[in-house]
Amino acid sequence: YDLVGLDNLVANTAYLRAQQVDYDELRKRRVSLTLPKPKNSSGLLLDRKYESVCEQQPIGRKLFQEFLLASNPQYVAAAEFPEELSHWRFAEDEAREKAKRSILAKFCQPESKSFLSYLTGEAAEICKNLSNKNFDEEALEQIKEATRDFLRGKPFLEFMKSPFFYRFLQWKEYEKQKITNKYFYEFRTLGKGGFGEVCAVQVKYTGQMYACKKLDKSRLKKKGGERFALLEKQILEKVNSLFIVNLAYSYNDKTHLCLVMDLMNGGDLKFHIYELGERGIRMERLIYYTAQITTGILHLHSMDVVYRDMKPENVLLDAKGQCRLSDLGLAVEQHKRAGTTGYMAPEILKQENYRISVDWWALGCSIYEMVAARLPFKDFREKVHNEEVTRRTLEDECKFEHKNFDDPTKDLISRFLRKKQLHRLGSRGEDPRSHRFFQSINFHRLEAGLVEPPWVPKSNVVYARNTDEFRDNSEVENIKFDAKDEKFFNEFSTGAVSVRWQKEMIDSGVFDELNDPKLNGHGCESVWT
Ligand code: ADP
Ligand code: MG
Ligand code: MG
Picture (cartoon, rainbow, N blue to C red):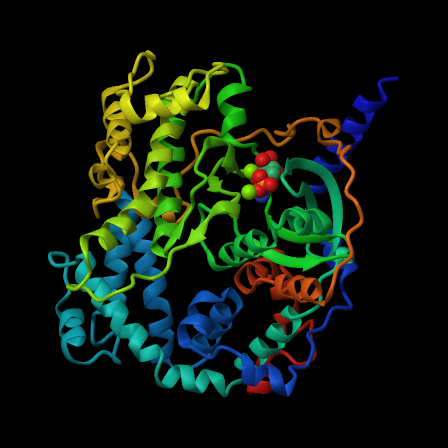
């Protein structure tokens, strides 16, 4: 027998089967779940901003919608208008025409029962005069903003006094549960990093699959990696982007700090460039991935975060074939601009450009690598001293010898590889997304996850190395932890991350199950009437 091979096969089979979640079976197993009573103190500590409760948090958003739809026609219209507006924005061709006619008839005619009667002043005028001819993004955005202003006033105050908000507090209480290893089933190792391995895990009662990055406490302490681990966690929990891996939970056990994130089971782009048949990535996929990466980098920059580790190896594909940036262990938060506009010296302004421009340079190198399966200043597996690569990077012009480079791609790469950072695309306030390389991409639809991926990973293939290649032989001596270490472990282990956790509750059906008045004695409606 090839026992190593057998181990790997068993691990792969369990991992692949876990991904075929049987939701009915799971539902049967969790009949006893009920929501806890909110503690008095938790309501006081809660962030009660409209944006947080009704827009950012998926469960708060859903309950607020339910509240509006159960109220008067004016509130119903205010709930429905933004939905139909985003439908129009993302629709194409005929569906878009239809969505437009519906908006005009439903919300803009004073005799319609869904007329936006709460609008006042300029927004009310715009709404009444809206027609086929002046139906543009700007006018609609203005009506949408006025709708938000309306909602965050009286409707929001009423919501907070309603049973729907009590239900929200119950979910917030539930969200605070302590997370331990028992919360998950564990599956095979998917990769290895500097402080430990990454394995697949599954939440027992929802069936949701995640990747768990385990950081060895002893190793962290010995190498002084604690600060970076905490930074990685804090940045990951703040980002909420379709193109960056999101954090769902952080917790710790005796030996490890654990980061539970989106499972990316389609492999990393380095694997796709070098290990799967033809080397390089074909143009359609290249454009799609580059568009998603660019959007992810812009998202980080908009949060004043510099990624600093852009390379194909750190871009991972999910089951649908969409990609996300991962491994934010090198990312740093920039200090907010020190100074006031108008008074800041050139070197301060230049510094700021410098910091973000490293990501655009690295993206240029990565696009080059995706086309040519080598780097602009280093051939594939070339044995060369670092000093020589440095010299070439500083002095040589980038050459495009590979047959697959077309004009727009060469132009985009050249602009990202400008030696002077102030001349580099992306660092001068100029938006890389407007480059003709991205001509075929509708970024609005892309950001909403509506553009079909050009390539989808096979559901019966594990896009990772064999498990035995991750065996760890190095000894870690047992290190004693003091009170300061324990304090750090606790600071790190904050449990569920609101937005991601609430999404899991909704996607897995747990939200509907516990919210359904028929299944649960004290549903919102029975208290309401
Ligand atoms: P390090 O910071 O130590 O380099 P990484 O975050 O890069 O650790 O993770 C190590 C490896 O684990 C990656 O190269 C990748 O193969 C795998 N991996 C990391 N995150 C995920 C994920 N979310 N889904 C699937 N595999 C992952
Ligand atoms: Mg890494
Ligand atoms: Mg790292």
